[in-house]
Image (cartoon, rainbow, N blue to C red; front, top):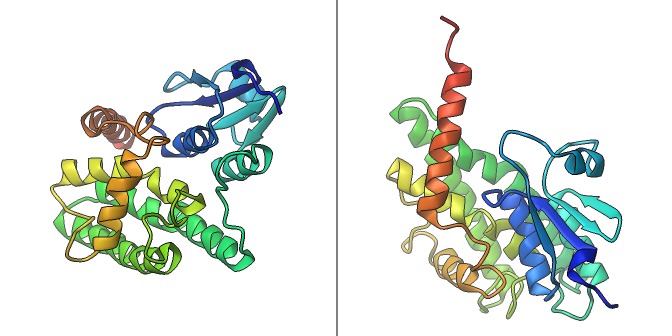
Length: 234
């Protein structure tokens, strides 16, 4: 299949971990694409046309076909561009396990990570941190089983769960920095600590993984907006 850059576009915003999933997958498959940056706080006409249901990024546009939802996009990329390394495991059980943990990370673990920043008071923050750490302990076990002693959840190469979970590493570091906590700890989750370093240094990841300081500035802006929205009217 001959693909030119103009045939493949990603609508997104650089701080979004969900957008990163699409970009990492395309990079892994060595697919050239055009990144169309959405403006924070507004939605372009192209985004509204391409994703009229959720009106959210990311959207992959392949030719004239829009594909929405980050993990759906990852699977689509894996099925369309078969020449690169496989993203989903070939074994049906391994594939089911990867999808299970990817859903857990998106629906349970990441919301709890965001909960640390939103926590009001030390007790609430402590409870939120404990919830995230419990999730990381489960993911440490999943990593040991899935990696089979190799570098990534996917084995020798990054795969579906690496992308689904790894896209949050930038925000995890920001939460650690802004809240004075250590979530990935060599003593508690040694496998994930080593995995995160290797994942972030991977050629498909390093150019799209946001710098912690840059992302922290975005986090401060978002927090200020949330505080403003929550403030009672004067």
